[in-house]
Length: 124
Image 1: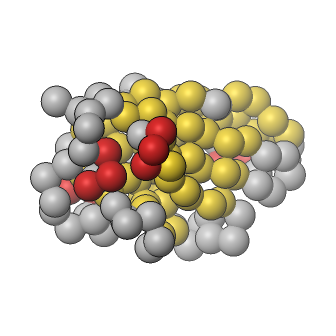
Image 2: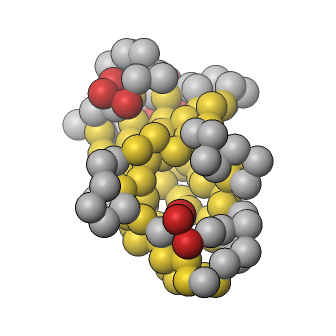
Image 3: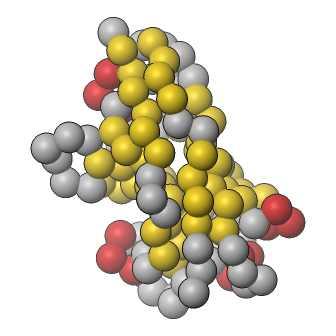
């Protein structure tokens, strides 16, 4: 069973930056598509960004495109989410997830190994 652990959350002001990290267990990390999701209070969990196992293909939600960057280091079994120009509406618990079964990487339901989440709070 793959385990993922997020870190790097915190509180920033509008316009600030944070970098989230996600460390995954297992020797097959490079074969997993990895994604970031978030859930704000009272809202459903939503997709933020994903990176293909090859690490050269990425996809972003329209709400974060141009501000967030997802990347991975397969040698370190780690995926990152660089978040710039943060807005109050980015406030949420951010979750990292792995798609270990080879499902459609663009389908959030294909992600089957989830972390506990890390809180990001952006104040105005």
